[in-house]
Length: 163
Figure 1 (tube, one colour):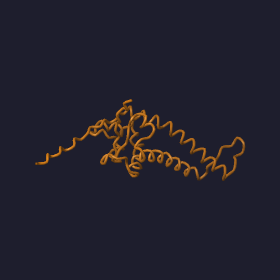
Figure 2 (cartoon, one colour; figure 1 turned 120 degrees about the vertical axis):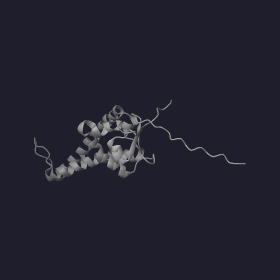
Figure 3 (cartoon, one colour; figure 1 turned 45 degrees about the horizontal axis):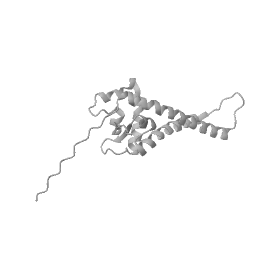
Figure 4 (cartoon, helix red, strand yellow; figure 1 turned 180 degrees about the horizontal axis):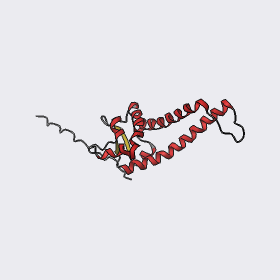
């Protein structure tokens, strides 16, 4: 008896989210980033006061040469926020709310740390010039933004839960 050839799997089509959905998720995430920034600022200020002492009444906390270190630490904290969530689940809270998930464009698995870091570095540049890096998704047949392409990631729209 001859074995029937197994048919090749058909590539499944996935929907990609549009710009409005992506920007809505960014608004959600920006609220979280504000809270993370306030917490970071409180910790940094607490450390500054522990080292330099409480400023005189009516005076501001001064940072001196450590101001740049505090700023770089803040930027790294925000980057860590995104990398942590993208690596562990492929979603930030904003992306989860708007049913989007990030995948490695080649393996369709959650992205690696290097992809997350590349995406964090490149995404702000996509916002420059009225978000041109986002608008290029409409010129790309795979509907990837500039930072999707550079980081070799893909954002897909998840199906609604049927309850």
